[in-house]
Image 1: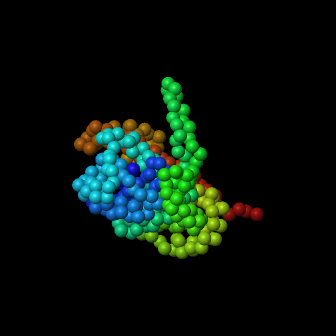
Image 2: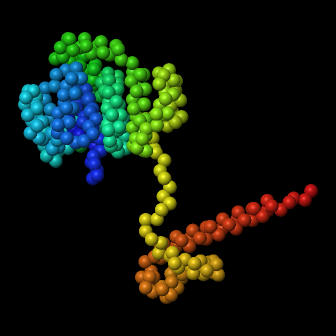
Image 3: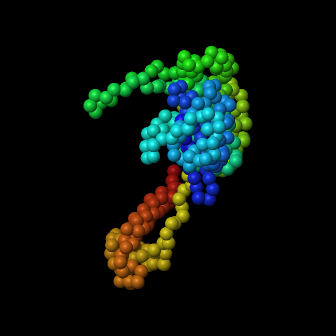
Length: 334
């Protein structure tokens, strides 16, 4: 099964992820695509077919125009691939690949928006390491049976296994492919793969937050021993995945609308000084009588109430802090 995971903006395109999942084993491949294009989909098929440990027999996709095109149809027909698609408006037809979009793509990349060649390269580096970590070391459950008793649904799951383990246990997989998988599994280092994933995630996090990547953040994390030692203290920093850490937001100091009391506030402040306990509704009535063209509707009453509340809060702070300052300035006699 195959599907896009990404978004499009008006002035250009965000980086997309092409997700391919084998239903039988759960083997998942992800390809970074800079734009949403049918020719790039064909190139992604070629790239994935070269990395898959088994032959690609068919493609089942949603109704995206990048898949439902003459070029993709000719490619599948020329290579003997059976091309099928989901039913219109039936999103659950793609449940397997949608689950991988959430469990793999979103958990690895997060929800930040990426664009440009740099982000595409960083995303491709992330998927190059994560495909090995997920398919060889990440076990998952697979549904064995499902029975319904009225409104109650009872599900039974098989023992958790990695996609590699499912392929090794499958009777239809050729012995030569199984030997190749075993040899590849022995050569892999899960700690090294996890380190590469974290470094790639840090790059994506920097690109999503600031548009640039700071190489100094990963300069001291090249040694596996240093990274392994840091895992024991990762819980102190909260979320270990850099792509899921909350980025600091700039304080909202600007105004979205013009100040309705920019010219009248000195008059209102004079009334407040003379009568500190006067209600904001009374002040609004005075403004409506004084400047009916601007305040006759009294639509700005709520804004005035907030402004008066803030003014009184500031006066109280000045009174309290002012008295404290004076008490500190008075010398204490021995």
